[in-house]
Length: 488
Image (cartoon, rainbow, N blue to C red; front, side):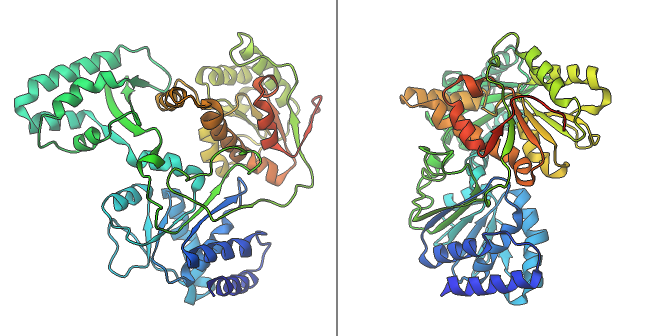
């Protein structure tokens, strides 16, 4: 049986390598082997920040299985797979060498097809997947990566190509482009340089293009991406006074609904704990995932809870005094710290103002999104930057959460998703913003929690002042409250 073979091979491999093993190697290997043998659906929740050594437990059953598979990874994980994990597997046991075929079309008889999310979408739309089972190791990013794979982007060059392909309609196209151009460039400038476009803004262009044929790419894809399940925005380049038109699905898993029907699938992800995600649908449900097995492979219980500084009475982010509150509390938190401090705020104006205020107090120790800080430095950064760069930085002695990582309604995609949920009468905050925020929070704090010795400060008054703050505190467990600050 595949489970027993994978168990024995992995156990021998781990004993040969030595070192302190990840505690769930054998469990993960058996779960994956069982799912491949039965061709069913399995969802495995890994603890946020899990050591990537879990890869070997995934690859051993893939190497031993005889089922045709499609392994779907992001570019970062693809690099790790090709440069680290596959050579490691081959060195440990040549009989386990896993042949992975890349490209838009695999050779006949290729058992393991390595795909990115763009290639997965194209393969499914073209009927190239056949009976292959899917193995998706980054379930926490599945929604975002599939949305990007389905995105249609129209650049200024595409407008020129359209006019050359349809010279009879050139005057009408120029008129419509000029109308959109005035609307986009006259919009008040925002830090993210994004301008939302309503369906009625695009309607005249859509009506015209439906009368023209043939159309150069990406215009046919733009026409097909229609309906209430899609939204558009313009990304402005203020220096060149140019803009790109972006169109993405609100729920990419619904656009690809049926992808997992009649097909086995294994999804793994560093997801919010089951308790923190209580009441939320499982990742991939809209994609057709019906997990026969759903397992959480968490870390062993922590010896010491996370020290949490979160005063009871703090102003809310929309308070006029909030900037001064952030500066005063951050100054107190940095004083006496011998290690690295990371301050996380997504609001651009607040973050830059706080960076300037702390720099006036602590000088060159304070940097903005730099990967080369001093040993006792202070990094002020966005959550997205920290999630991408935290592996390249030393472990901080404290993390200061200026604002909880909840998506802003100033983002056109977020605003469109919220509007769609509102129109359906659903709880847009607890179904959309809060689960995403909890997952980002747990991923951003994983290093601090895993290695211990540091503290967390939450200066967002909503933690104590809103009813949903209790769910955030549950996601942070175990923690111990710090009633007053003491230097480390």
